[in-house]
Length: 269
Image (cartoon, rainbow, N blue to C red; front, side):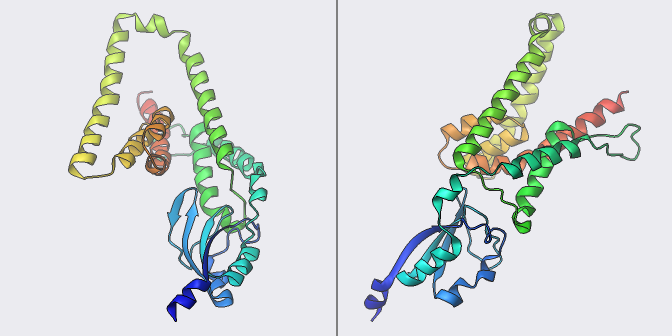
């Protein structure tokens, strides 16, 4: 009797909160064999992932578990589902990433044919280390989870400091430079360099290649390394498409900007 079987089934969303589960593959837990349940969906930072045996679980993952009520309760004990524990900040991984990023950014990298070595700098180093920690951190059982509110606070704080330092650095000679004869030329050239490639790529992506506008907006923000534009896109466009495409494009473009800028300067020395 299928109706009788269905009446015994429940669906519950369980959060991974046990540190011992962080970094383990879903298949290694053998939840289906042990409890006779199915995991239909896994959400991580609002993004739906495919529940494959090779998927590496991380703290904060939300698993949709379907099965009989006693079995689901046993799975809950295995995974943790202690939401309160996730509210505790995990600052160790953040400071480890910043420290290692600054160290990596200060290491000179020799390039054949270039007299002076190049460096990733304060921007490139933490980005590379952040990507490595995000990828390999859970595999060595490093807790990289931060609450959504803490994540937003760090983003807003970093953006505010960035804009403040940018204004302090450029503000001293801003008006003197703008009102010089060549100042208008620089502003016009900067406008064309910024505006024309963005419009061309947006039209090609949306009209020719039929890419979703949210992904296009995030891609363009990431290619320009423009967190202010991303903040506006996130507030304007529903969903997380801008943030996902921004996170995909931004590290590579920032890495190229840091290296290429130094190579261009050195080529004219």
